[in-house]
Length: 120
Image (cartoon, rainbow, N blue to C red; front, side):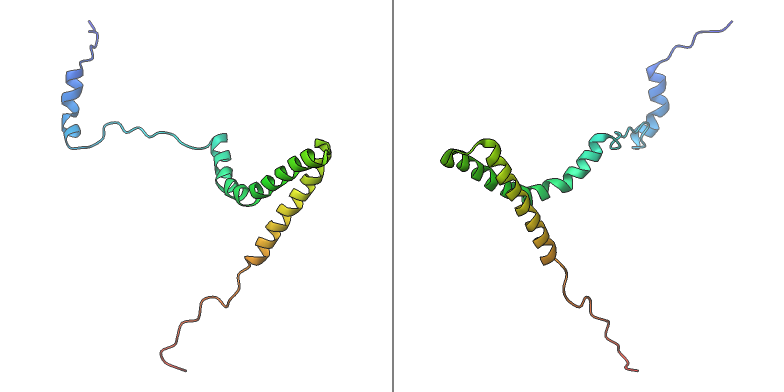
């Protein structure tokens, strides 16, 4: 007749005791990372946020201040002030990006050649 198997924790522990004491991992669980939409957006944001902070925010601040001053001082409507300052904002951002691209071109002769010991 068959007997029902009863799991004993002590038996399991004594079987693996030699491995546990010597630091051999019995079960090693690694947390799964990456591969989702958040990973893609995080990778894009890693490069996009510094560019936005460098080029767009300074000009957006100036455009917002000009819009508020046009509405408050000149009595213009918000719509016309936003249109006028929005176009100027885009032009300023575009010119700054182009200027930084043109000014950052590399100049020079590159790495010098290796000196020869014995002239030919």
